[in-house]
Image 1 (cartoon, one colour):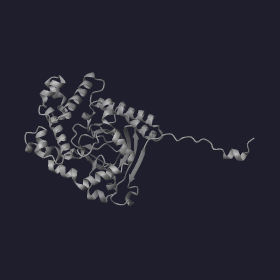
Image 2 (cartoon, one colour):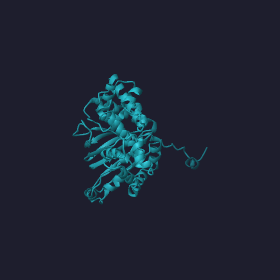
Image 3 (cartoon, helix red, strand yellow):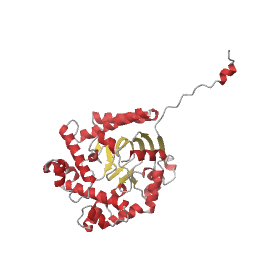
Image 4 (cartoon, rainbow, N blue to C red):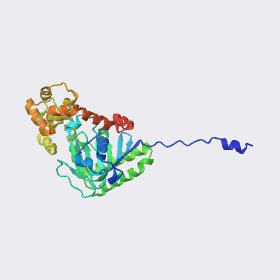
Length: 365
């Protein structure tokens, strides 16, 4: 019979810890009015890997509070972010300097979604709201203190759930229908459950959340339950991709699109009405391509870029570029190569940590 001493020394098998999601937490201004000045600068660095945050002398001197919890969920990510009022923007100039092209759906559970500059026909909810952002398109947002639960979804995944989601960029949906309320309830439950969920269960729950929110946007756009409307949305997405695939081709025009799509001229023009017309979309696509070329090929003359993308003259290109971006082509090059800007973007990316860097590498197009 073994003695008690031997029994006490016996090593019991340990239970392995269940796998959890990669998680990070960041906060500033926890001291409230007593917190040191300049807290918004730390916040600017934290969000600066995706968005530019407007900072003024007054905002640097003023108290600022913010906190972000982020979970990496397969190829998607989820954040719970609360902060004081901010103005955020993602300009064409900024888009040309990075490769982040995810879709983001934000559910505002405290405060409200605020104002999206230039977005026509958007409601202005007093409380809450759901916002869809395509990080491949420019946007400017102003909002007061709020809390948002955000779903970051790679384009490939979103295309399988909500084809043509880029057309809903900047659109706000109010939380005033059974479907939108269900989507918000799911997002709030997910936020509570993620810390203890297995990675497999979290991916399934995230996808369900994205599907519910996408359904709310489709219904708001009049696409839910309508085969004709859904087909129109898919057709617009195909037309946009045909343009964006090679915006500089000399023969690109409504006529060539009609031939490739096999539709009538009237149908094509109706498709692009929300974009300001098909010619306006082609020009905008060319300007986006020009912005990328200006940054990626700094030795390439501006005139060559202009002619290569189908503009009639360098002056025509420069005028169109300035109207769209608020700066000249040479100003954009200076912005992208400015040592201070590059140092800030590198610091902002480094602040995200290695887990996020690896996630972004596998989730980017």
